[in-house]
Length: 147
Image (cartoon, rainbow, N blue to C red):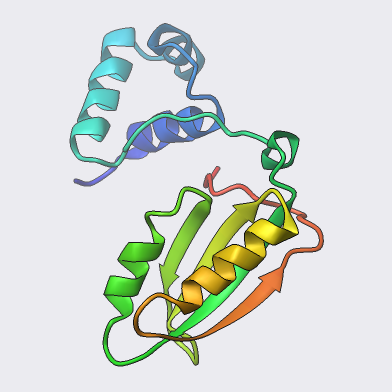
């Protein structure tokens, strides 16, 4: 699916505030409500819009630790390892990367003990050769929306 300027404008507005009604967005963008609704449906059908969610402050929910964990895999089992890690609820992102490590994970933890158990659990996953854990000291920006 090729996006035009109207689709891009709708997406940008949804990324800033997904609670905008189609009517509010139509008024803001100077187009009809029917046009906005049909474009959103088209974007959903094409899986460009995969869902709607709230952006929460993890620290206020008690997740005060963010870890960036690199994984080096044995053999050619990288995809199996990544699939397994993706199932953990505190894992925010799993990236298959280039370079000296195979995978990078971003995960949130409430306590240092939780992080310790998690890292030790990673080492017990078959074909995980090594992990390198980085603890985030300060977060300057954490927003995956492209606005």
